Length: 189
Image (cartoon, rainbow, N blue to C red; front, side):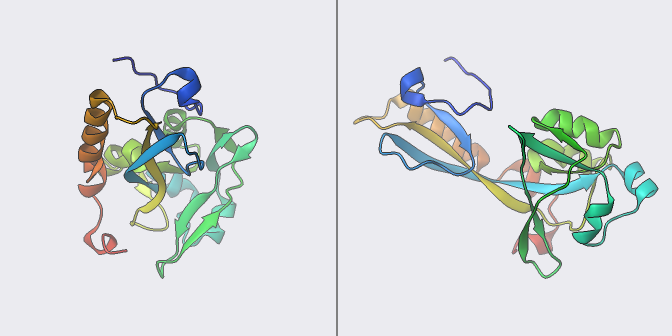
């Protein structure tokens, strides 16, 4: 088994790749099959020391007065999906002071007190649980990105590919990093 980790959108057929995990929207393609693995959840959070020094935003509008850390690529900062107090979701275009193209440096920056960030819970859950990060605006997570397993369409799916797809689906059916700390009143939203 050969595994490669990168954020590049690969051409499975041209590059001879049996299986990929793709986050976000899928392109329509007759040559690619897909199976939903799970929906990634994210949260807006900051270091408690940053919030103590700069205040805790109480509304989406308050975010404009804060240092924001954004995820960006190719000159584009990705929007955040923000939950209002009434449960309604809104896309928010952060005016980020710091833009990084990978989640781990974003986590390092928020832990260092550089501002407020929007990150997936698989990256932040332990830090929130330990009190190193604090959720901002809501204690409810937002499912913001669907994650799929994708593979080239063939008559017979190779058993090794089927085993990996099944294992991914089983593992991510109830992501332990979300289930262990989401407030009960958020589960129904």
